[in-house]
Length: 289
Ligand SMILES: O=C(O)CCC(=O)C(=O)O
Ligand SMILES: [Fe+2]
Image 1 (spheres, rainbow, N blue to C red):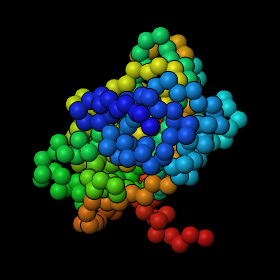
Image 2: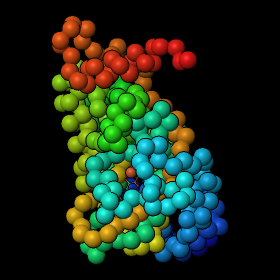
Image 3: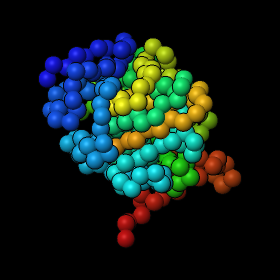
Image 4: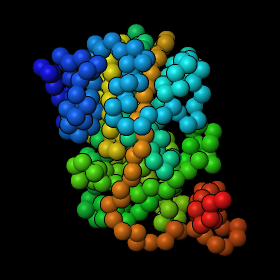
């Protein structure tokens, strides 16, 4: 393969040209992805079936657990079209509310607006590494509750480590996001809000990001274990993407559990987030029938 790889920013992201993804070696793509965290392949002409088959080479693929997919009849494809309100404008990693979040996402840009509608990815390694050692140490011992509230499913939730270790690189990254993370478990609701503000701000720093301007036919592939992304909602007109999602992520924490969940027992002294956390902890404690 005579691929040309061009880095796009200091923290992450590379554009790869001179390669036909239909037939490319999955091992060499994974090697590049481990190095760059998000890859862009402009000028690919992939049909829906080729897109799904491409994704299958990297693991088990799955349609979206909640979002309706009225546009295509392929159950493994998620299509988001601006005209039906489907854009993701808050920072997130895909499906982080599940026990096993999305591992890789493979997006095809189908239709671009005339201007705007770029997508931005952040390196969660860079975000973590920007914190002071004292705050890194605190975060290593914390966990956070994520839920699918943005999809109208606040009952779908899971607790993940705030800091995770990438199995291929051994690097630590922040694993809390604006869209799906509700609450740091070991802090009070007020403390959690303050710390999440600091951590989400670290993710959102422009120096930790790469911003990509699309052309139709571009395929992007990202690693949800060490990145977050969001779309800029600064366009008019149609913008349509199709996504194939490789599932089966196993989240490895960075440290030992050091503290118990911080929920108030005193009646009347609980916030909505305390009640949600208690309900989730209760559901974990109950034997499954
Ligand atoms: O529309 C985009 O550029 C990204 C949408 C998104 O968040 C996703 O496909 O996971
Ligand atoms: Fe997404």
